[in-house]
Picture 1 (cartoon, rainbow, N blue to C red):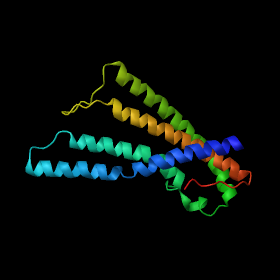
Picture 2 (picture 1 turned 60 degrees about the vertical axis):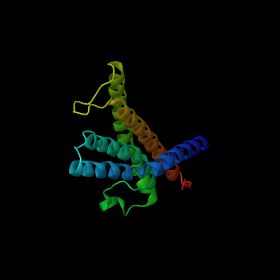
Picture 3 (picture 1 turned 135 degrees about the vertical axis):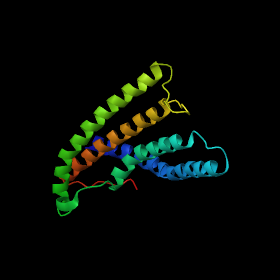
Picture 4 (picture 1 turned 180 degrees about the vertical axis):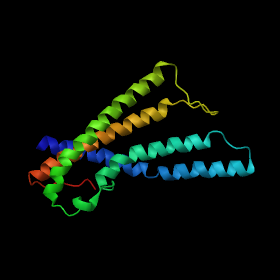
Length: 172
């Protein structure tokens, strides 16, 4: 059980720190979109703003996802779940998180394959007028999916400890 607690602590600390930094990504997106509006109004429109805002949004969501799960901010169907005991929630979560782990593992496998393709063929580029390289956002996606996978495993371990009646220390 000590190994479980160390893993939980390690993963939660990493995702907490990355999540706290990532939350300021909203300002990056706002700045990009503000520049887009200004450039369209007063100058020649910038080709890069819309696509760069999309990349920033992907990074924002994918790197913020593990933090959201850790904080319990993810969306749940609380019709039944909200009234259950902590132990019953942990038992159900132990089963449902396995589906999430399976999904994330397949997603990571595809992400790594797509990123390798991007590197292998001389730098895959977007088919837009701006034509940015796609490998940076693909690497960010792989990192985010890996962090989400680790957080899902951490949540599974927390639920196992809850089923055993043990307390879980919060990172915050």
